[in-house]
Image (cartoon, rainbow, N blue to C red; front, side, top):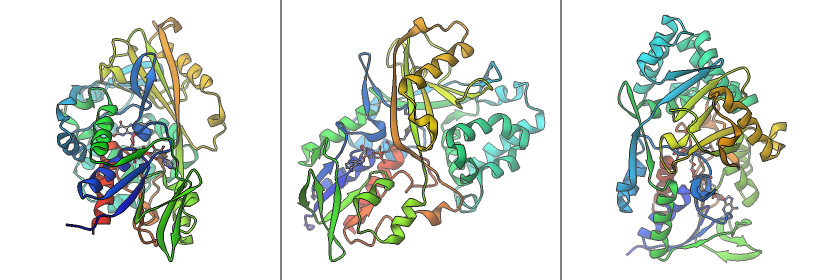
Length: 431
Ligand SMILES: Cc1cc2nc3c(=O)[nH]c(=O)nc-3n(C[C@H](O)[C@H](O)[C@H](O)COP(=O)(O)OP(=O)(O)OC[C@H]3O[C@@H](n4cnc5c(N)ncnc54)[C@H](O)[C@@H]3O)c2cc1C
């Protein structure tokens, strides 16, 4: 029998839970610490006007294998549903169908050559398996090279502007490439996109995982933020919660890395500098419950001079969680952006002022409930040469390992990738 170790996992998002579960399978003693009042992190849910719904929208792609394997292990694979989803493109006041070759060919605002170049780019990205070369390239230059200036401006510029602001010129082509590939691979054929969701949303996974952890005698401490990780002779010693020291053989951090620099003062200057070198965007995500559907689309890309958002997600067109329509509108921005200090009510007002432009029948009478969720470190900025920028998972403090959603670059943050990373963290402790 293996040595039983006493391990603290910091953070009860999908990564922390997946890590803890693996460690428990290997018969270790595991305590999970979560500062929030619930498990789930970015994938947690809340009550919106009587429905339990995710704070942020989540869709599943055909390539999310680590998620599928975990669903099977937890005996909840049958909760996974697939739906043919529609996409739209709201350009300059007109709603176009988008997302398959016919829509592309009939789109009147681009010439044939630009369309061909756009299609060739998606085909090329779908074939890339080694992202080393694209890691060294800038996303905007890469896109302009492939699709041309006109198609870039029309199809991509708004996304970069309203998601990254001053960071837009500093995004890795590998990062944007994996995003395009993940969605492109979630098709049954070139005409049909198929996305997945869990009946009951991400909570179905989180609850099953949380319950399995408790059944295996793991502990989950909610409302218990870790204040510090202490060391002795360059080895992890304890964590401090509520001013009290609790001793462990290993500590695994799955919280956003910028928090780690404050939590672990004994990390080397080199690692702290690396973490500080990674910028992040925050998100304010508006969620609306409407009496009627706004459009038929799940995903609506937007490029419109009167709207300062790159898109909206009509989640109920993927997951029919209620008879009403559920809309998410994420406002990503650096935390330093003046708009971030705005009240939630102003973000909600802004979204409501746009909806009538998309569907002229919309009136405020349709609104049954409105809410805005915030997450400080919602999107790491993965700049060119990001592989070199990443801090190591195994730190110079023995017994202390760390990862967050940037650690699985070039993949974008996602539940499946966080699960895989959680499993890898557990494996590191085993080795
Ligand atoms: C707007 C939006 C849309 C998204 N859409 C999708 C999608 O469609 N599909 C998809 O797969 N993924 C999507 N994601 C990403 C997905 O939600 C994340 O990848 C995933 O939840 C990350 O899990 P994690 O455990 O790695 O990190 P997190 O969810 O960030 O969890 C970290 C946890 O650590 C806790 N914590 C922080 N500090 C402390 C402390 N000091 N002590 C104790 N605990 C602490 C936090 O409260 C949190 O619970 C989306 C995210 C956002 C924001």
